[in-house]
Structure formats: structure tokens, C-alpha cells
Image (cartoon, rainbow, N blue to C red; front, top):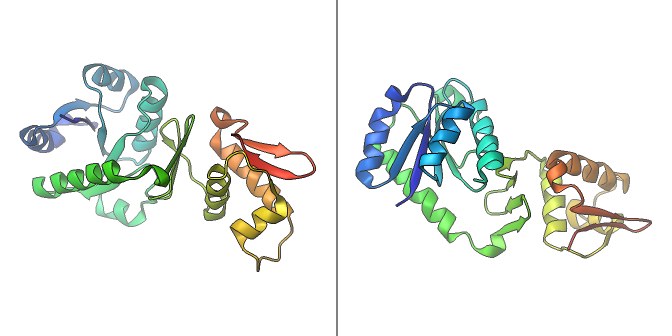
Length: 223
């Protein structure tokens, strides 16, 4: 029986959702987004799915995932956000696996949850790279560190993915330009150095040392 944690500032607004989930056979806990409440809820229920009422602020998604990833080692949670229509238009999807607009029907929410669970179960190992705290989900173009989403540009993502899927191999800057930017790219090799520096900075100290500099040659991803 899967555990679902509902995160909301006002538990009364999610009572219909909670009732529908319980009827469907899920174990459900409800928490406000503050640290003490989240830790208390996780002590009672180890969730696999978060349903986050983020209508007042999208920041609650990032904050909740960071706390649960760091403090509770819950790094691979599925996240469904409750959004307003305006937020749905503007959302960048960072940290979200799916969203529903309130008010939503029980059937719609339950159908979305079934689809998410099916997708997670059917992602093959060659579509996910897991190295320490770093997770690269190549099916959904997602990067996370300790469960916290990392926002990369497309080229930063492609560079990281290429190095991570060729672990231990040393690539010159010219080779990386060819593989990631393409043979018709006319920029200099300094482009590689700039992107490596940005990727390292965004991955945080938790992944320090994963991308190694090979002096006078280029770069490699730690084996």
C-alpha cells in the first residue's frame, strides 16, 4: 500500500482529496509545510508520493523536497502539485512530475496517480543514471541532487548526460564540442570550460569531484 503525504497550509481544503485517496487504498498523512510538521508526518508514514498544495506559492515544492531529501533521505519522491490556472500556464515544471488544477475531480486525480506510478515502475535502468546523490532521469530530462531538482540549460544538461553516460573516459574539449554542440559549431573550446564550471556550481558541493579535470587534456566523469 503506497504512502501519500498531502502538504497544505489548510488541511480542510484537502479533506475531499484525502477521503478519495483513502477509499482508493492509499495510506495518507497530512502536513503543513513547516519543518516540524513535515518531520512529524514522515515519522508516521514513509511517503512515495507528495501532493503539494502550491496555489499560494510554488516555493513550497522546492522547500519540501529539499527538507525531505536532506533530513529524511527521501530522494525519489513523485510530486503532484495543486496549481491555479495562472500557475499552470507559467509553471516551469522544476520539481514536479504532474499537476492538477483545483477544483479537480477524484477520478482525474486518481488517474494521474496511477499513470505516474506506472511510469516510475517502467523506467528502465538505461533511462536513469544514479551516481551517489546525483540522479539523471533521461526519460523526463530531470536532474536532481539528494532529491532536490537542479535547473540546467539544455546544453548544460546534454554535457552532463554525455559525461555521466561515459564514466571514466577522458574527452578533450574538441571531442566534447563535437559530441554535445555538433560538428558545425564554430565557437571556441572555452565554451566547454564555461559550461563545465556552471554545471559544477549548480550540482553543489554534494557532487564535488564528479567531473574531473584532466590537465592538458580535457574532462572525465569519475568512474
